[in-house]
Image 1 (cartoon, rainbow, N blue to C red):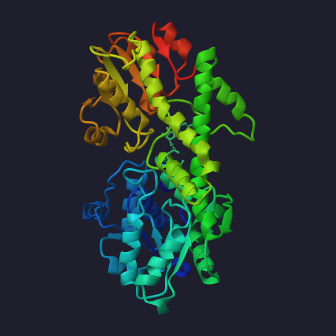
Image 2 (tube, protein in one colour; image 1 turned 180 degrees about the horizontal axis):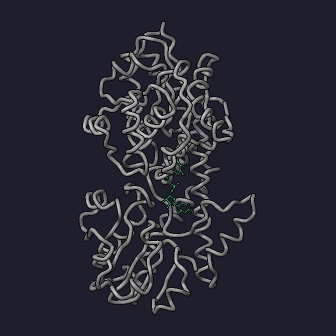
Image 3 (tube, rainbow, N blue to C red; image 1 turned 60 degrees about the horizontal axis):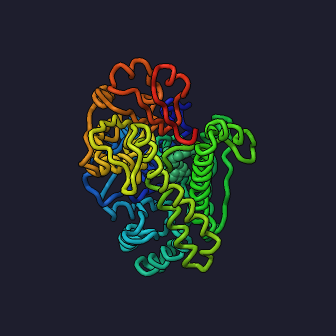
Length: 466
Ligand code: UDX
């Protein structure tokens, strides 16, 4: 994270570097555009959203991502980076076009909505006037690359010989710059030796930086279908790990076990590994939930749905975390649930965290926000504080009460729900906090605190699966 700007000067040999465009300036495309300029490439970021393009051009990142604003300004100044809504300028400029537009869940079903890809590729193809490579980065159902090639063949002059390649990305929000500049692997697919060489040249900057830092970055060159599948496979596997540990958390809760010890103990086995075994309120965000569902849907369409039924259960385990957590909070405040759920009328909850994870302002499919809304439906007064996510949360869930400081949230609270492991929450002092609340009751949705320490300060402590 953050250390990208402090890295040894990125080696910059622009002579053999292809010129690159990134179509779509959301988290993905914008971060890539900025980081590839940092790596020495001439880059243009394209989006149809004029406000977004104006913001980036003026040096403002319209979302929260640590370190990115500084890197944006630096690279705008370098002259290698610009942003535009002019698709003709993009078509004229780039040797390689990366598709980075969103592929959200289709309204009303679990498949992926490919309309943004269709629109971006169609628009670009109509303006192409030289041979170039169009490379998919967006997460898509397997088979999309072939369809993208068909769109190009329909709209771009055949004599140009425009080709499609695919190169999935694995960036995590809040760690995005690091993941682009210093990825743990590079995966790509090309349909010809020409495209393969171009993709090698596109990634040269990453390899040169790695060499300077004495790191190795493995490269997996593969076919289009595999490249598409790699991304969904990775996200489905990560989701499965989290739901597995959350299922074990349920078992710990009923048997008096401690899920944090259990996760630590199995994580020492290198075959299992200790990452993505944090039990809690479940996974959310703009990727894991929808990619899981899109994979199940696509597998069904391709006649192998049976093999992926278990991923439906991974999704259900995750959804049940939300109900489970509401029940735990009701028990904590002595309002056990009836058949219609709990009645939390008159209970003031200090609610810490609204985003889907810390160090982002992203609230897409946020478990914390979903649980806050359920508490409100159960008539609790929910006072939400989040270091960066308030504006987005307010737009999505206006029925909640929002405050600007942690102190305002916890004042006179009947229970504190610490839901998202922001640094500011993980370092709370039980005694100082105890003096601000009405009742010393803590729901530790992050499993971040030492229960004994909090209990020693008079708190009723409730974690998840411990
Ligand atoms: C994810 C993938 O990690 C990334 O490789 C891919 O490119 C995009 O999707 P991201 O959505 O940024 O990245 O979030 P991530 O850090 O993976 O967390 C996803 C969710 O899982 C969060 O809600 C997080 O709180 C939760 N989580 C993560 C757990 O509940 N337990 C864990 O142990 C880890």
